[in-house]
Image 1: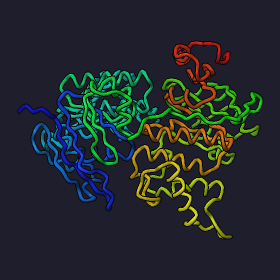
Image 2 (image 1 turned 180 degrees about the vertical axis):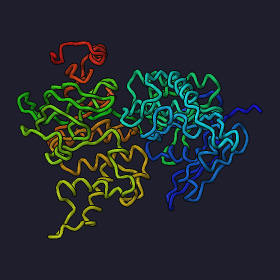
Image 3 (image 1 turned 180 degrees about the horizontal axis):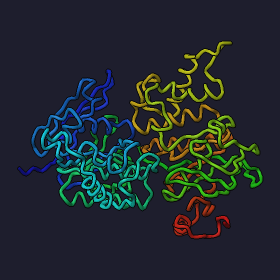
Image 4 (image 1 turned 135 degrees about the vertical axis):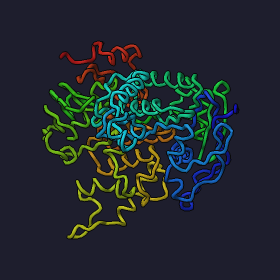
Length: 531
């Protein structure tokens, strides 16, 4: 049976505990179409996809209103297994991999291939042996299709986040009978070259008749690969348009309901940066972080500056803050305002007024089953004794709640209140909670890794401008580690490009694109160190 749409979601409404998060949303996607689903964090995209994929959180909270049709037929999708039965796959923004499994095992989990043996011939199919060779072949084909140069027997634990994203995609590609694939911020942690490769894979899949829902905040990617888009705002349907009939400016305005301004507003800058006034001194720094190893870094961060750290995935930029914070084994010398840190002692950096916002907000950054209030206050309570009162150091719930409400307002955290579990928030709002917790520590040095990963345009502007405010008004030294060169160039005083675990070059924000390309490719352009 032929039909115009592979997916029709009509009049979708959803309420959580009296909070109506979707208000009659429509979503139509044609076979072989790449359809972008756009909207700020809190617009309702994740809830809509949870409904499509039959996630338990939907049906354990009263279900939803509206209808879902797959290829013109009504679909009852009340479990993820039912979604897979209808040929729906999803590549989640937050990874669903099993760390202790290999790449092969993660790709084939739930769809293992078996072969008969003597025992199974007598007692039945359940006693068949796993056909490891066949599963390895399938997994390697999926990996080769997306161009991921990694062996299928590699264990997922310890892999860089970008690699994990590709394993997620390979798992979905390996499934048979896929008719609709949802990509939830698939390029958020990828380098430009990896993202370009992924977009090419999406086009290839669409050419085979697979419908694709593409959730992203990167408007240039939407313009490059999408055929059409739907915009949601505050849980409501705004518009469905063909890409050929719109442009980046219009999409952004539709998403946030106002004209988009510059990424970071110009602010009064009365700073005097002194090359000899060093906040953080790094010498012969090595970090043993799988996939992001640092191999002898020398770098000075000036007091009061915003220093960017950029580079391609796998070159070591992510390893730098993780090593400083003691999350991975590190050697060498790191001095904060002249005081050498004990790199072998977890918590040493925190105790020396260095705060860190991790790129892995769910694995490292958040206590997912705890409230927003507890997440914001936890580190400051442990490190500085804040939110404790009296000789017995009892938890000051009133003060912690007041502070959490201030942070919710400051960072525009979209939530039901300070008691909502952090794990129930959208990815962008989780990132804001991580930032709020770091700011609550009142650090002298604030390191933020991928600070706007998964955050929409409006929230990105808010977060970046708050980092500038901390720097300009409170004198904080800020280090921003990011895969987004545009972000670094709009925010930072200097940008350190990391190549092969070492400092490749120190760049000015207004250096040419060509020079940035050379530096990220490992070519010396006059700004790096002699090794």
